[in-house]
Length: 414
Image 1 (spheres, helix red, strand yellow):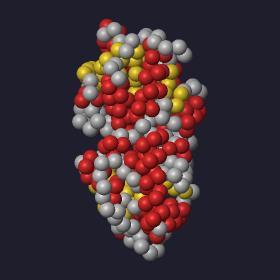
Image 2 (cartoon, rainbow, N blue to C red):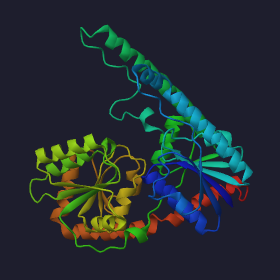
Image 3 (spheres, helix red, strand yellow):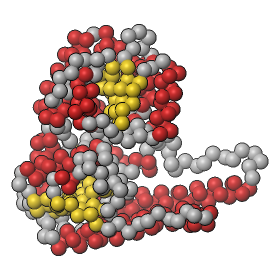
Image 4 (tube, helix red, strand yellow):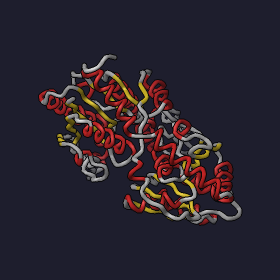
C-alpha cells in the first residue's frame, strides 16, 4: 500500500506508538510518507518519524498575538482560538491537496496535540483511518475540576472591575471550549474508522463523541528494553512527564506509609513542570521520602534503571493505556499500579504486577510486600517479562493496523 501519515505529536507515548506503527508498516514493504505542521512539536529528534520515512513539514500559518500592550493582550485572548483553528484548517487543506496529488491509497492520521482529533480528515476525500490515543480529556473529565462547572461566587466587597474581567474571561473560555468540542467531534466523525489503544479508550470515545471505534492494542520493544541485566537496588521507579496528571505526589505519599525498609523513589521524565517539581521535592522532604528526579536520560541509562528497580510505581488518573508499566515488565520488573483506566487491561494482577486500590496506603502496602519478599518480586518480574514478550508485541499491533488500512484502501473485505 501507499500510505500517507499525518501527525502533530510532541515527545511521549503517542509519538512512540506512531513511530513503531510506521516502522512496522515500512518493514512490511509499504510505501509510507509523513506530513506534519511545521511547529515546535515536530522537530524533536526523539522517536522522530522522519528517521523512518520522508517527512513533509507543511506550513502552519499561526503566530502568537502581540502582547506588547494591554489592548493587544486582550485582543489576543479574544481571538487566539479562532486564529489557531484557522491556521490548522489552512494547513490541513494544503496537506490534503498534496496527499491527493501523491496518489496515496489511504491516510493514517494520529492525534493533534492542540485539537486531539485532527482536521485533516475533513479535507482529505480518500480512505482515512484515525488512530486516536484519547479525546481532549480536559473537556470530558474532571481533571481537578470539571471545566463546565459554574465559577465560585465572589467574596463580599470584590471590586466591580475585577468581577467584570472575570465574567468576560469566563464567557470567552466557555465559548472557546464549546467551539473546540464541536470541531473535535466533526473531525473525528470525518474518518472512515477510529482505532484506539484500549477498551477503556473505546468507551471514552463513545462517551465523548458518541462514535464507535475499534481496539488496536499497542506493543513494547522487547529488544530495546530487555537488553540490560542490573543488580536489583532498593528503589522503586516511576516514568513519565513530571507534571500533575502523573500524580507523583500520590506515589510519594504511598512510600511515606512504609515505616521500615522504605525504598527510594527514582523518577525519570523527558519533560517537567518546574513549579510542580519544586512542590514534589518539598513534599518528599516533609514526609521523609528519598527521591531522585532524572530528566532526559539516555535509553541505556533508562533500561539499566528499569532493570535494577524493585518495582515500577504508577498512579496517573484514568490513564488510557500506559506504556511505562509494560516497559518495566520488558526489563523483568513488576509494576504496582492503581487499578483504573486502561491499566486494568495491560496489568494482570499476580502475572505482571499488582493492581491496588486508589489509596496511598494500598500502594505502600504492595511495595512493602515486594521489598520484604524479594523471591516473590523476582518471580513476578520473570513472569512479567514472559507475559510482555508474548502478549504485548508490535507485530500483533501492526497486524491489526495493516488489516484495517487494507480494508479501507479497498485491498481486503470488511
